[in-house]
Image (tube, rainbow, N blue to C red; front, side, top):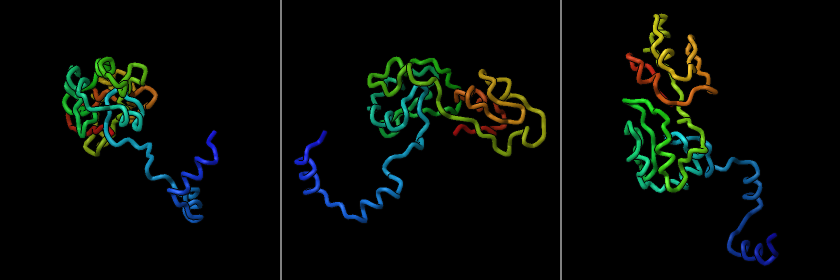
Length: 167
C-alpha cells in the first residue's frame, strides 16, 4: 500500500485538474490498443507483450524454413506471400526473449479474405482453397471457421486467381 508521502510527492510534480480527472473517466485511453498492427509469427505473445519483448535479434528469421519472418523496425513480422507457414515452431524454440514461445497459440492470427476476383464469388466452380486447407476451415460459401483456421496461408498460396489476402 502506498503511503501519503508518495501521493504528496506525485501531486507536487503532476498537476491534475478536475476537468482532466473527469475526462479520464469518460474517454478511451488512446495509448493502449488491442488492435494488431503487424502480422506476427505463430506462437507470438499478445501484441503489447510481443512489442515489449521482441528485441529484433533475428534468430527467428534465421530458422524459418520458408523465410517468411522478417524484421521491420527491429520487430519480427510474418509475410505469407509465396509459401505457407507450416507452424513448425522453430521460431518459438529459438526465441531468447519468449516473445515467441511454444506455449502460445500455434496461430498467425491471420484470416483469409476473399476479393471479387474469387471464382466462387463470380458463381463459378472452384474448390482450391477449400481442399488445400489442412484445417478444413473454409466452407463452400467462403465462411471461415475461426476455431479451426490457424492462419497458415495454404489457401492464399493455392488460389491461382490471387483473390485471397490474409488480414
